[in-house]
Length: 172
View 1 (cartoon, one colour):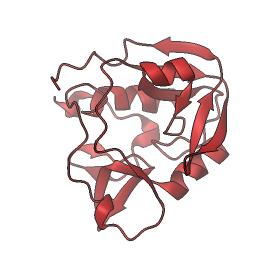
View 2: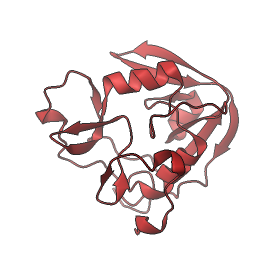
View 3: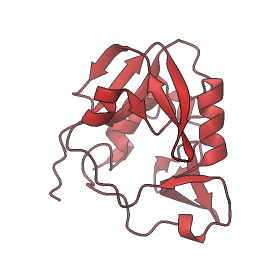
View 4: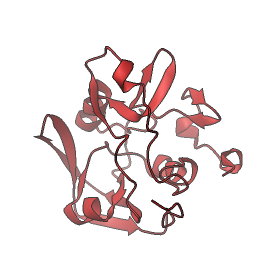
């Protein structure tokens, strides 16, 4: 996958880069290296509480809260990650190897195990990518606490885009 041909939204242009890709705001960084299998607890909470995009870290001011997830997330309207801007969600859907369906699982070896930071919410490295994923756009959401972490319950869908991300082409 050539991500260089995918234009980076203006909202994301000031994010630090790693191997040609912007590092999402909520991604855990240990010793200067991003761990895309883990998120920072404090940043996730900050985003959820302040209606801030989890990808670029900037306020969502247009009233469109995007969530990315599989069929179960869409059905239940429950998401692990905070909301994002429309532009940030669509960029991530195309550029992120996991979301774009070219990588079926997170990396087996993350940096979260080496972190001494207690702000790690969870590690997703053992979670397979759902076969189908969508961008779910709502005009509202609520936070709730369950199993030691905050989750987002999206409002009723304004739009659900199942075509934003291909069905995974990678075999299990």
